[in-house]
Amino acid sequence: MITELFADEDFQKKLDWMDDFVRSEILPLETIDLDWQGLLQAVAPLKEEVKAQGLWATHLSRELGGQGYGQVKLGLMHEILGKSLYAPLTFGNQAPDSGNSEILAEMGTPEQKDRWLRPLLAGQAYSAFALTELDNAGSDPTGLTTTAVRDGDDWIINGHKWFISNASIADFFIVVAVTDPDAPSHGRTSQFIVPADSAGLRIIRDIPSLDHGASEKNLYGGHSEVVFDGVRVPAHAILGGVGEGFAIAQKRLGPGRIHHCMRWIGQAQRAFDMLCERATYRWAHGSVLGDKQTVRAWIADSAAEIQAARLMTLHAAWVIDQQGVRAARKDIALIKFYGASVLHNVIDRAIQVHGSLGYSDDLPLAWMYKAARAARMYDGPDEVHRETVARLILRDYQPPLDGIPTEHVPTRRQAAQQRFAHLLEASSH
Ligand SMILES: Cc1cc2nc3c(=O)[nH]c(=O)nc-3n(C[C@H](O)[C@H](O)[C@H](O)COP(=O)(O)OP(=O)(O)OC[C@H]3O[C@@H](n4cnc5c(N)ncnc54)[C@H](O)[C@@H]3O)c2cc1C
Image (cartoon, rainbow, N blue to C red; front, side, top):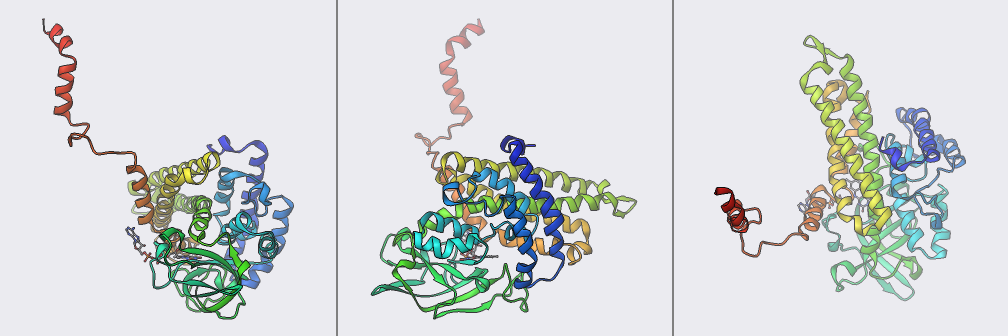
């Protein structure tokens, strides 16, 4: 097991405890319909157990109040947490709070940490991250139009955000807004901490989507349309410096993508287990499904894809730990689109092998599939990550000086014949 390369005996014990706890205490909760308050009540005693194990909110570095595990170890933990929708919440590192707490810990002033980070880490407050806008391509945040304009000692924020996860249960928002429209594209925006009860902040609706129906409102994991209509915040509500909005967003997304990808591995493995179990007993056309060549190919392909995505993600995490987020840019972009496709493919095959049962809500596959579809969009769509990978790779290549491909055989043959002429001549005598 590759895990052994990274996990010492003590840490392995923690992983084993987590795995057992998620399976026995958290997975059963998924089967019950819970609203936000009900969910908080149900997980409250579980959170205490997690805290007693020293496994609460482990994503921050030691100097910022976390356990200092680094991204590889956190990745291995997220793989376990990814198995269940509610496990990250129970362990205090659910998105978007985990990313928000990271940037608050790194960029926040002592007052901001006291007011926002402390309750966030204690599991007493929840947050949202508001970047995407309905009328602008979220995949290209240089085009944002939400503005924050200085007015005396305050900033006034105006804009229309959309698909903001957990907005309707959040106590505060971290909002990305344009503070200098004339600055170079990556210096136009800043980030602001905005209390959810600010005058002018309106949640228009929780958007019905693939993963939430029209009747489901104020839900953990819901996505809202939010208007900021002349929202006034004090000067000290800015996170980091003016013009640093883009740079902070990049900081937030690097480790967050490792966590997402490892959670997807956990989800994919859960779907894979269902796929394999079904293959052992469902009988059709004279044999169990596991005897059919196509199903056997699905099992082999899924195993290979999960293994590849897992190793790629742990490698990206290792590069972050060794050299920092910037050095891992290509590896992070690779796993973001590859991991999302593996998750999608494995769940899709698991649904197919279960037929109508797989499509029904009598198995968790249907909601897993809906969530997996979104993975190809949020934190940057597949196409943008492919673009990043190709751009970074192409930097290491140049056109051949003479316009002839470096590997062109006739050209290489001619050069080799000249170079080895004396040997060739000698061998012909
Ligand atoms: C479940 C879910 C949760 C989300 N949560 C949040 C949140 O909490 N906060 C927040 O701010 N946002 C959130 N989002 C929004 C998300 O970040 C955006 O959907 C994403 O960035 C894409 O932006 P967009 O939807 O505006 O699509 P667009 O930017 O309009 O892109 C649409 C499509 O265009 C194509 N495309 C874009 N660029 C390129 C390119 N360079 N080359 C080729 N094709 C390209 C891609 O296929 C892409 O899917 C969430 C989205 C989802 C689905």
